[in-house]
Amino acid sequence: MHLPQLTEIHDRFLILSRIAHERFADALGGKLLLRGGLGPDGIGALVAVSIGGAASLCVDADGDGLREGLRAGFVDFVVSDLDEALRILKNEIRRARPVAVGLVAEADLSIDAMIERGLQPDLLSAVPERQARIFAERGALALPATAGLESELSLLSWTITEDTARSMQRIARLASESLDLARRDTPPRLRWLDRSPRYLGRTFASQQCVRMTDAETAVLLPRLHSEIPAAKIARDGDQV
Image (cartoon, rainbow, N blue to C red; front, side, top):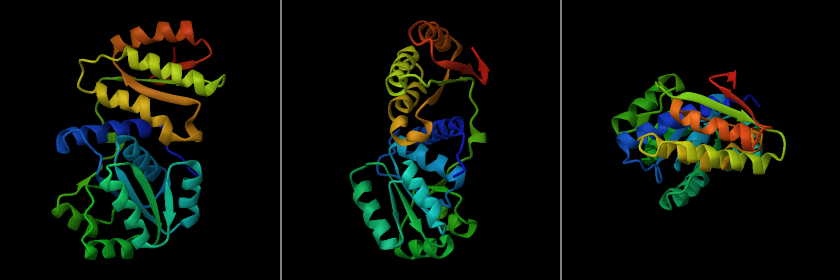
């Protein structure tokens, strides 16, 4: 399975959080992303949406790829029937809980059937243009690519291979304590640190990242070097 970079998932989540702030009153619970095709970009979109608290439906004819995503923890259910997919989504959306459903089907025909049934996603990713236009006219918003993120924040990333689970929890706590609570972009970054391990799965268990200001980084780095010296830390790709 080809995977996106962790940093791409992180930045997509920040873009999604910005959309949530501007369009959905900072709440993605009960919202739905429709995605055409899995692949690395699709994995990034589904994981970011799950961390944000929304549901997603990914339509892909490649059942093996979707099932591989299921085993890796990026997809929660894989079904081959649209009715079954919609039942799962209805239950979880009603409870405002995140869920990622993979539908093994030809995207064009299945999405036409969704339109006929009145299904209306809130967000779109890689949906064919003809169908995306119909959803957009009804109020859906296309999820931008990560290239749309413009941020003055540096990217701090870390990896660790010793006592991984406990060490990663400690680093996440230290990073959270270092964030400036007065910044508007801090709640999404706190959410990322708290919830992303649940949806990133085993694949990214030994690595993590978060965007930080210079001042926040200056608070965090001495604590990391002192308390968790085994962690390998990089800032914008350079070891620190």
